[in-house]
Length: 142
Image (cartoon, rainbow, N blue to C red; front, top):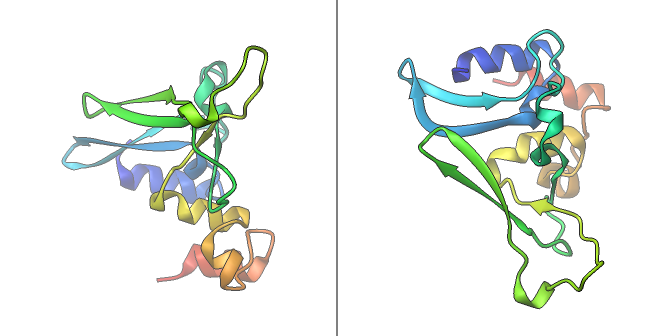
């Protein structure tokens, strides 16, 4: 989707689709493009996406105790791939379980704030989306 189309959908569905979109380098109609894995009718993750690993990978956020073990790579300017990368010092033994974690970087900060674990929530006394005032401020700020 173009960034404009996705932004409208994101607003209609209360910013839930933002958690499930991926930016890519390829332009569409001269505009920024996003890969959107949510259903246009509901704004929820669509059934095909639920069959694949990436939606089950969690985000490290600003928790310094967590270590990203999944890397996101873009290919062909339009495809997004997730790769498990277990560092040698975090090597697993047979039978060990580990949570898959990724660092979405700065572009994900708005989603973190809406969920309550962004920098503004942790250090700036800003509420998450359950705080109506904070939510309205985010939704309608210039």
